[in-house]
Length: 432
Image 1 (cartoon, helix red, strand yellow):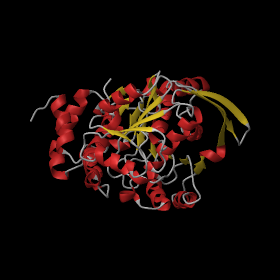
Image 2 (tube, one colour; image 1 turned 90 degrees about the horizontal axis):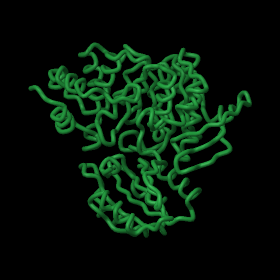
Image 3 (cartoon, helix red, strand yellow; image 1 turned 180 degrees about the vertical axis):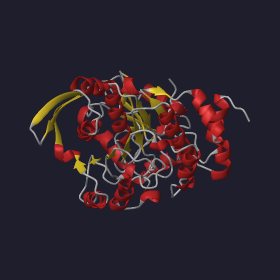
Image 4 (tube, helix red, strand yellow; image 1 turned 180 degrees about the horizontal axis):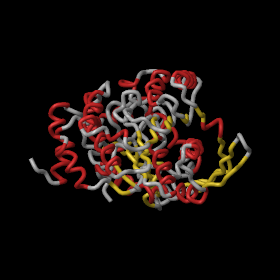
């Protein structure tokens, strides 16, 4: 059956089990399908160098920052991330340009027989597509973000030159485990034999897990927060300025980041630690390209949804924070820099998050506009409103995020702040 691009995308979304749509039922607790699928197309994952990134929060920003620097230096750089916001092709890019529509059509068609036999999930097929595209286009290096976890994530069939784990927090506990140690063990599954690994943040509970896995795999391990510290921090609506000091050699550099969420202060340390190791592996990045790239990540790679200031008077911010740690970081920045303003939260979640833990963090005095994305996994807006009311968080509920945003704008004065958050899938339905 010949399909055009729109028909191909409809097929991928409708026919293949998709985690963003149905949740845990789409999750495969082994790598068998991905291995079989890639084997059927010549194992493209072995035909390019890669960096593998896992973590509960920050892995997307870290992936884009590294890709921006490599791209700016002149390396042909692949980037695989998930989920997408507006266009499926956001998941697979080379030098900031989305995968060609015709490649998506041709790949889907050429793997149809294998799909019938293997029955891959949406994510498994997408991973194989990315690997095939990067191999076909002969990238110098690809930055690969895990989807969920690490050990059993479909991306974990690569042999990277560098592994990165940003942090560990409570998310997807139904699949990854109910303790930080268990979750860390799953993420540590991306650590490979004799392959350096950078750990962004660590906790008392997680460091022994990483140390043990690195020792088992004879993998050199580097803790970014032990190498770097950030000072002289200045936040603006469209930038984040900071000084980063290398504690090992007492060298300090000034940075301006266009990813201006305060949580990027953690990610910049991870990125710089990774950059230092990449230089020893043949991927040097000079200071000019490093600084330029980190100041222009959004325009270089097309990253969206990280403390994006969409409008002013009132200030409207879009952020994909969707779990306890992500929402905590968002609230910290709000309280630190916009404590004088009234806060309006437009929010919706998927139904497999620990909603109660997130709601416990939210301020009682704010105004809320509860909503939902239009996917089966979404928590219905009325149910979210009811759960929030039990925590004395009051507001209206809306079936459409755009109606919720309009209501917030109508109620807010010009000095207020409107925050749209809670789910990638909420932001994906925002118009304009």
